[in-house]
Amino acid sequence: MNDLWSWERAAEVFPELLSAFLQVTLVATIFGSIIAATLGLVVAFVRRSAPAFIARPVHWVMEFIRMTPIVIQLLFVFYAVTWEPLLIGIGVLGVHYSTYMAEVYRSGIDNVPKGQWEAATALSLPRGRTWTRVVIPQALRTTVPALGTWVISMFKDTPFLFVIFVPEMVWAAENYGSRTFFYVEAFTLAGLIFLAASYPTAILVRKLENRLARY
Image (cartoon, rainbow, N blue to C red; front, top):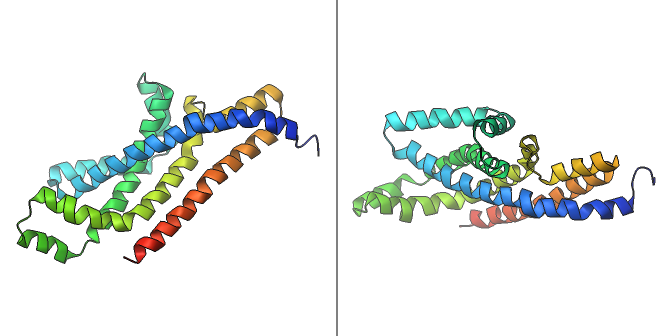
């Protein structure tokens, strides 16, 4: 058992993994989620309200991004631009997941009762106010849980940043293993850290979904 698992090695590698989690993995998830949620809403708005000659190309671009592997996108951008790898990772994660969040927003907007649109028109509300005061608040009520699910998925996809040399948590685990030739402790702890962060978030999303369903 000592050859398979060592508490001393686990204690040695844990600070490295935690540091990589807090400084890279968590940062990439937070800022990637902000980009995804914001850009996704913009895309949903464009597809819903923009003229066809704008909405259709946006739709095609989003479909292309959504249907191609995120690893290919990371490598393409990494070799195409000279940005810092972490910035590339955040940007690619954000844009990639914005395609999924845009569909969530679109579904929420389509589910706003037709009577709400008609009431806004009857009250002569400006188009901007109709969206910000009537449509978006109601759409968010049904979309927030699904958006939370995509944030969790993004969090679990951060190990793909490994391919563009971003020193996230899996990178740290791999580096420890390559130095010591012991991998079990590092990757076990990395998995447990992912679980410790994602499972409570999933529970919160589920509770939020149940709470919003009452309204």
